[in-house]
Length: 138
Image (cartoon, rainbow, N blue to C red; front, side, top):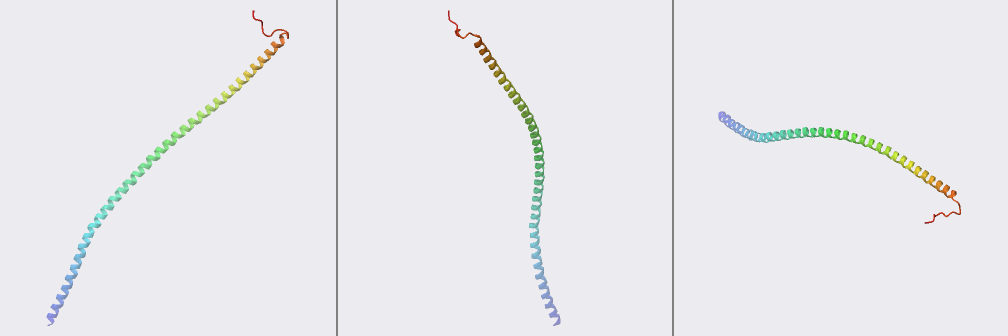
């Protein structure tokens, strides 16, 4: 009887071990299936990382180009500003010369008018009072 009891005990232990092996096998199968999903996730993550790195490189290159273009624009703006300042100085000098010439012209006109008035007054005082201011037509 001891032999039969040992055999029954062995059968029960072998059955429990078999059930345990079936459970472990199912978990391994599920883990392998999940491993495929994890592998696909890792590959997708690697591809996304590569795209992100390329985007960062592109952004850095674009930023460098933008900085270069901005520096060129600043240089051009400074040159234009300097040119406009020179033109403005020239225009101011020309305006002053025109104002001076206008003032001199006005003084000359005033002097001529004064001279003409003086000459007219002298001519009027040189004529006799009874003389006809208008000559007679013949």
